[in-house]
Image 1 (cartoon, rainbow, N blue to C red):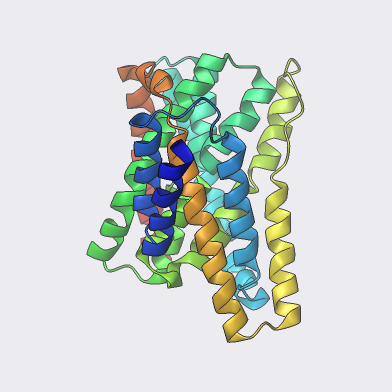
Image 2 (image 1 turned 45 degrees about the vertical axis):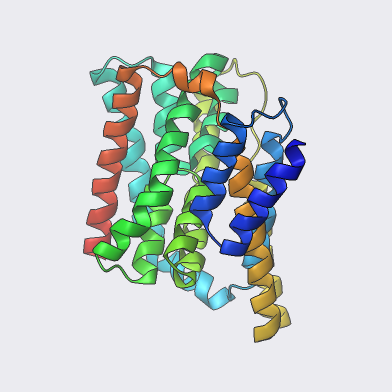
Length: 302
């Protein structure tokens, strides 16, 4: 029965081309209809999102990607390093559990739940710490998906400015892409390219942490789908795809991304949300507010 309700909700979100509706629809499906456990797995949303992003890469020219990378690499690198080390400093000041602080700092600086999951494998955190961290970040992602397009329009940001803003200030790739889609197609290419550039900082982070923590459970995986995204840009540019083909690929990419947001919404875990306490939430919120200040400064400077 659940599939007959969940599928129309996801299809409506795709038809409406609404990232917000997709995420809220997923949350409604999970919390109100209560499907069986693992009815939609974590991997389903992640794989749909990665596939949608790679297909989007086919529609981005190599010249656009290199121009964005060369223009924003310095700012993204400074943002990642400043946010991460401010997070570590706040962890000590607020007396947050160090491993929990490390998880939230990594997620805020780089790529949300993906970074936290990778770091958790290196530093050997307790499952509860990871669940609490992901729960907090999920709340921020849901808020950003709704609020950021409104903020961007009130500040009269251009598509490129908003793409940069979303790429560095929102935690998870899904919400970055969703917010950019809500703002306008012109912001999507910039947001996706720069967000994946930011995600690459996960590689040096886990390598450095691996030097200091020898008791991790398993070797974390590098974000390989970013490599496929870059390859897709090369392929799309080489084939010189026409306007009609590019438009069809963008429709397909959007549908997969919206489907992914619906699946991500279904992964809300009431148990992990109830485990969030005021101190941990306040720490994550303060760090995110600092990160937002950094992002506004970079937009103003650039």
